[in-house]
Length: 298
Image (cartoon, rainbow, N blue to C red):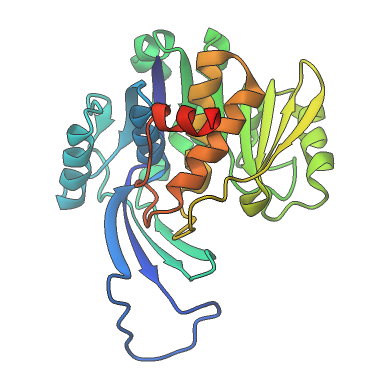
């Protein structure tokens, strides 16, 4: 399948800490606890889909610096095309993720000037219309592209991550135009079922999936009106939960586009995400479709 992915690329440094809150001390020595990788939501999703066997067109922005060279080199090693990546930023975005042994995390994301960029849908018309689906992350440069995707009839998916209200100015364009809407259960103002229904009544998405961490994920299908909870996959020891949502999102899309069955897609996606968090790094730990099917078949 051919999937268009448009989202953030950055260099991510993960740091193992003793716990939260962090007490002050001048120096610590977390041996093998500090790691740096190419990452960002766009890269995480592109790598996950590629690992599952999809052909990915990746759209994004980078600077013209050493961090950009590192990201491009990794994408090329994974056979992900860099044709649609523009190197027009002043600097490449970077992030630092603190995580503790319980899987809690605190993220510092320096986007540089990426929020000032915009993709002209006309320039990506062929890439969009030749795709089986478009994954358009909730970043400013996708605002016009997500509207164009909806108009073109391409299956469009987005993840708005953390919401505390359905009336969210930043995410409205994405929620209004997504066929498949993902979000996290962090900071919900009410119960998950109630919030999902509030989202549907306002935006009428075809499918809504709520990631619930260790509790699994909740699926709403508008065609049937059914709500389904799929438990988390717990056969792998958790190392770092960073990137779990991206793994759940991308693998659900892969299996849904392939089968058209949302429940079966989410069942496989929670396994994919559960395996992924057994590694340290948002862009690491993606397994193959064949491994998922072996686990499903028992």
